[in-house]
Each structure stands twice: as structure tokens, then as C-alpha cells.
Amino acid sequence: MFRALREPDHPVAFSFDGRPLQAAQGQSLASALLAAGVRHFRTSTVSGEPRAPYCMMGVCFDCLVTVDGVQNRQSCLVEVRDGMVVESQHGARTLIAGDLR
Amino acid sequence: MTARIIDRTDRMADAYDLVVIGAGPAGLAAATEASRRGVKVIVIDENPAPGGQIYRSVTRGNPDAMPFLGPDYWSGKPLADAFLASASDYAPGATVWSLEPATAAAEGAPALARIGVSQAGAARIINATVVILATGAMERPMPVPGWTLPGVMTAGAAQIALKSAAIVPSGRVVLAGCGPLIYLLAAQLIEAGAEIAALLDTTDRRRYLPALPYLPDFMRSPYVAKGLSLLLKVRRAVKVVSGVETLRIEGEGTAQAVAFRTGNTERTIAADCVLLHQGVVPNVNLASAAGCAIAWNERQRAFQPVADAHGRSSLPGIYIAGDGAGIGGAKHAEVAGRLTAIAALADAGLGDTGVGELGPGGLDRRATAELERQRRRFLRGRAFLDTLYTPAPGFRAPRAPETIVCRCEEVRAGALREIVALGVPGPNQLKTFVRCGMGPCQGRMCALTVSEIMADERGVSPADIGIYRFRAPVKPVRLSEIAAMPHTPSAVLAVTGHAPEDGP
Image 1 (cartoon, rainbow over the protein chains, first blue to last red):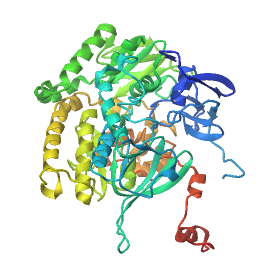
Image 2: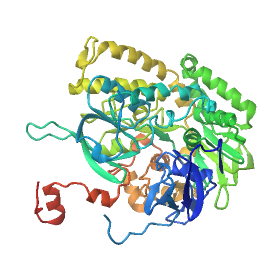
Image 3: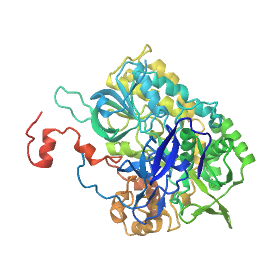
């Protein structure tokens, strides 16, 4: 759905739902996922329909993903980093049991 | 001198003379002006680099590699560079989730506003003598059937992706909507090599006549030459369909086509990416949650915080500058940021007021006179654009009942109209019926549409309906972050019923 205008100078490696992906350093996670061809970031909490980023500026909350185990991160406001483990979200979140510190 | 970059909340000071929220043109100008006058300033911003959305990533790229963004974009670089060379503290990648205005202070203590902020997974409260909200604008929601499908984004979203990541939509791109930005984006995408299948222009022809009286002023404005050259450039390169009255985005799991009507003709075109836009409106959540009075602007058809020409909100110590106070564009926001900083410091008796002659209220008269002149220049022509590009009623208050209005809770226009007909008093009560505005975006994406639908059903102006009352935290903050914050003995007592054993 998106393509990069140039090859990244400093590529970083990360994963989305277990799939290894590459991105340019310094870009947002949402941009990195879009450029990698990811179309579905999550499914909605009410009807379960697929969603993807709408605003790219922190307003719409449609780009929510789980980043390194932390749920509901706005991928448009998170910078992609080397080794990041990113997962799509399906439906509503569950409370994480255990040590919350 | 260089700005001190703050990457953790514990590196922020407990108190600042001035806290600026937002690093777009208004925030950058306000902070640079204030720190030049010797006060202690911090700028808190969600993005990783200064510039806001309009100058997004302007310090990171260069015009030779990305000439397609145009000279207006690159003109933001000196502003961002000047800020980075100032004595300000700068917290990028940080989110403000609450703002409590100063209340009557304890004896001898100064009245300070309290700001809840999160950065790198840790929250804290900092204090401010003066707060300038420079929270900017967001795109007016454009609720049409299918706008929640993946592959549908705002024009601004595609522009942010272009500026910050040098990526362009691939496949068949369809732009739909109205206003200057959609033509600017089309021109940028063409230059960057994207394939634009069509631009569906929804400009309402019934707006030509009301806009006409403002045309002479627009013709003398700084926007006219650029606007005309953009229109010509886009119309030469792209199929532009004018007079589009309805839109529907179709597809299974992703956008695949756009169906639209002009007059009595229905057509469908294939699309892989649909970019919607119908102007920008102030981002009012934080101002509203702080308790600032919010009012309807009929000409801009949006709600905005009540503020005077120098950014003074309805609350002492809280100022609002730039598009967050009413849409005026980037150049206007920069000037407004400077004016607001000067006024805020003068009101609080802070900082070096400069060498100019001091006028009423201790304002630096020489500095403000020139800024006022620039402000008038940048506001010239706006009335024409505001009036001409007021979206058609059906794009503000959707009539197709299946149209999703609240994207988070998937509340549709038909359901909202039915409930409004039951006699719900206002938007806040509507929430309790159907949960519209109660999802993670906290009403940002539906507030205006809900007010427009209520106004449409009742045959009144949104001014008579009002808008959701937004509440802190205005951005999600993790409970573990709140729990890890230091607590006062009285707060511990209130929650646990026991006085803390190791009080301060």
C-alpha cells in the first residue's frame, strides 16, 4: 500500500506477528509497517473488522499494536527500533495478570 | 546555546516559568521568544523531532533529497533550528495527559498549574507559572460509508508519511474531499512519483456565492499565487472530478473502490488507497479538559477555545497559540506563538520585556506592533478559504444511516439520529446511550460529527448544541505509571483509608 522512495541508509530489523521485517531508522512504527506492506494492524473491539492507521498523528487510535509486550501502543507515535517485537491486536484488550511493576 | 533534550521525566525540573505543549510553529516560536527573554521554558511534544505536523521532520531531511515537499515546508527549518539553538528544555516523544489550572495558592506559595506528562514509560507532574497550549489542528472528520476500511487514510496522514518516512502510497490512489491541503498533497505526491487515479472534489457549489464578498481580500493575500499554481498543476496531471455530492468506499477487508455521485450520475472507480480531507479544525481536548471555555466558530464551522488576540484563555495562566485557538495556518501560528509568549510573560511579570517601549499591560510595544502587522497579513484571505471550503452538510452530518460516526465504538449515523430524536439533552448524555466518544480516541474523531448531527436533527446551530466535555487523562496513561508516581499523604489516605506510615 506504500512504497519507500529510497533505500534506507541505516536499516533496522523488527518483527510483526513473528514475520521478520526491515525499516529505515528514525521512522515511526506505523510508517515502517505500512512500507512493509502490512494492511491490517488490529481488529476492532466491537465488530472485529480490520483496521489500519487513519491519521498518523496520534489522534485516531486506529494504529494500536502491542510493542514488546506493551498493549495499545500508538504505532504512529512510536519510533521503530532494532529488535522490536510487534504484534497485531485482536478485539478488546485483556487485563495482564501478575506483577504490574 | 542549545536546547537541553529531555528523554526521561525524572530529568525534567519540578517547576518551569513556562511550559509549552506542542512543538509546531506556534510552540516553537513561543518557546524561542520566551527563552530569549531569560525565562525557564520546557517544550513537551509527542513527536520525535520539532516541527509539528506542518513542518514534520523538517530538521531531519534536506531539500535536495526531498524537493517535492516544496519551499513552504522547508521554510520551517530556520524556526525549528532557532528553537534547538535556544536555552529551552525540550522533551520530544512525551505526552501531556492532564492540565490542572492554578488554583488559589497556599499562603506565600505562588499559584502554579500542574501538568501530567508521560515519557519513556514513566509519568510525573510538573508545575508551571504559565502554560501555552500549542496543540495545533487535526483534520476535520470526514465520515463516509467505508471510511474505517484499511487503505483509507486522511490526506494529512499520507503527507506525514511522506515527510517523516519518505514513503508514498502505491497502486491506485484516490483523493477525495475539499480544501487547499488536498491539492497541495496531490501536487507533492505527483512530484514524488505516486499514481493518482482521481481527485474527487467535494467542494459545495452553494458556497461560491457566500465566499464571493471575501474574494478581493483573498486576491491580495499571500496564499493566492501558490493556490492558483497548485490548482493548475494538479488539474494538468490528474483527473479531477468536481461537484462530488456523495462518497462511499467499498471493499472486503481493505479499500477496493470508491463510489460517488455527481448530480444524477453514479460512478465507481477502483482504488487501492483512498485519502480523505475536508479541512482542519482546532485540537481542543486538552484545553477543554483543563476547563477552558470552548465556543463555536461559525465561519470555520468548528469549536475552539475562547482566547483573546494575545492567546489569553478563559483561565488565568493558560494561553493558547496557533491553530489550536482557531485555524490561521502555519505562518500565522508562528506569529501568534511569539505574541502569546510576550503577552504571557508580561502578564506574569516574567523575563526581560526587551528594549521596546512598554504599552498597556507591560507589553513590549515595539515588538508587538510588528507582529500584529504580520498577523493581519497572514489572516488575510482566510475568510474566503473558510467560507468556500465549508464542507457540504451531508459530509458534516452524514445522512446514510450505515455511516460509522464513532470509529472506536462503531456507532452509526442512523443510531445517533434515532437517539437524538428521543430527546437527549446534549452530546455528553448521548455518550451514555451508545458509548459514542467513549473509546480510546476519547471523542476526537466523532465529537464534531455528533454535534453536527444533533444540530441537523434539531434544526439549530452546533453553537446551541455544544461539544463533548473532554476529561483528563486526555491521552491514555498506564495505571502502573500512575501508581509509580509519588503520592501526597492525603491522597494515600483518600484511596487506602490509612495514613501512610512513612510520610514525607
